[in-house]
Length: 235
Image (tube, rainbow, N blue to C red; front, side, top):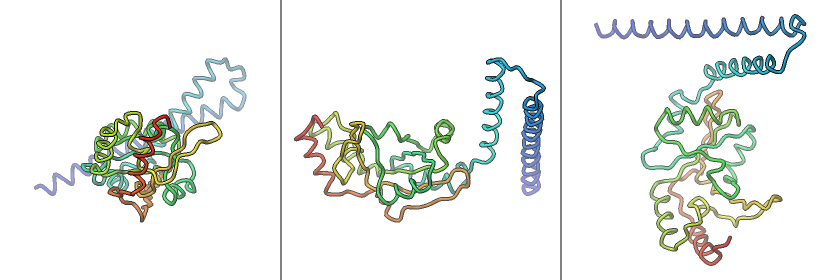
């Protein structure tokens, strides 16, 4: 009896999915026909308002298309992203070029002044992840996964408090090369590549792991960074 019920539920779910796909296909066909007519000269004089409406229609179609092609929330990519979420701090960053993603795995993660300007914290809250992903996925198909063990994160948070270094972030401590200023006078930090778990192509679902990933990594350089910060608080 249970097997028959599950089969009915599965068939119903497939029917709903087919109907949704059909609706989206119909919308796309209508949109394409309308677009062809407009661009063929039937509507020769568009006002600024008409143009804005047309652009909004294009954006809606792009949104629907990405919803059905995005693979981030499939079992394997999502499992890779949120693995050990209970005892690690996880951040995500998007990049357009795969070469850049591979370089981050090899060399570490560069950020200017504040880590939080370019990386988003995520948790096992899937709704929160969905909102953040939809807001940033246009920045690139390659989602970089960064993770710190709670033990390491909490340890250096306590060390910053003990030394009265409230103006510094923990991520600034977890670097192994000296910060430098770029051409815009921004201070550039490089997060150790040990905290780069890998990246996900959220369009295809492909996962690329960093063989050197270690969220528990604790370098002697981190303690030296604390001393440098204490001796040069203005930097």
